Length: 410
Ligand code: ASP
Ligand code: MG
Image (cartoon, rainbow, N blue to C red):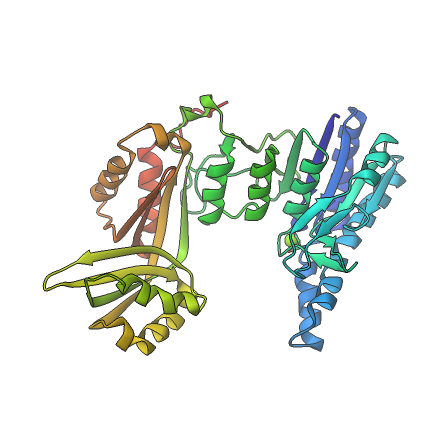
């Protein structure tokens, strides 16, 4: 089937004028004989407004009611788009999540899609309808409405594309694709034509939040080609995210991601003996604090320094946990540092090319950027540096790896 699933985010449907503009684009595609399934988010920040309404009546609303409330935003946008299309002579039908057959597990507010019964949608597509589905929602086996976690409409779209075996899932947003790095930090940042799922997961997980992470995992699992595009610039090709293919090694490095909300804890003078790491990280994990990078350096006299990073907003909590467990952890003193950032080079080409790390470190040294910690994976090298060096580092690396001149891979 010549089917495309298109998803439009909140800012792209923030007003009637914007929804009408989307309708125009859809009509053009419909007239070119495409079958269309359209997934929408709620208008503008209306989901936030719903959250706010609930907080005015209850500090701790039951999750069933909460999902009932939050899911209502998407019903507004889908019904309006369908009305506009019908008004212009295009047969369209709006669907809630459950009408679209989207079944989820029981977890209100953060439900996972288990299956989609596509019978009804398929029948309507066959009859020539444009099918407009409310994103971010489904139904559980109690027959209750569930929501998929904030930003969940991306996942609705990808799941529908997988279930309907669509050619492509197109995510329309307010940027025209995924960039080699954040253009606000490095003006030479360029839109990337093609990325692999793995690279996108690293870029998204590391701070370039264009797509809900879960939707990329879903797309990867079911091999759904995903395209991120600008909602209101026509003729843009955006960024295509797909499975890795042999010819994709052309570009060594795809992008530079960074996260600013990091902090570092150094536990000094712990015993260099088995069990120390678990004695330290156990209580931290029990307190639900996520640890990212970990380094242990062995000093003299059988003592070591144990350093790790946590997100900045859990720093105080982590320090308290460590102080509370001083006896068990058996350290001399702790230091913490708030103003650090993590900068990462990402690219599947790294797998087959040695020397990327040394090139990266040389470049940082040349620019007098001190590296505090390093970690690597198959397709990523991350360094922790002082926040004041973020812009210098990102710009220098962008130049060093010629990301502004990169020949885009096919
Ligand atoms: N409207 C929901 C939210 O704001 C879902 C979405 O936009 O994808 O989180
Ligand atoms: Mg939204």
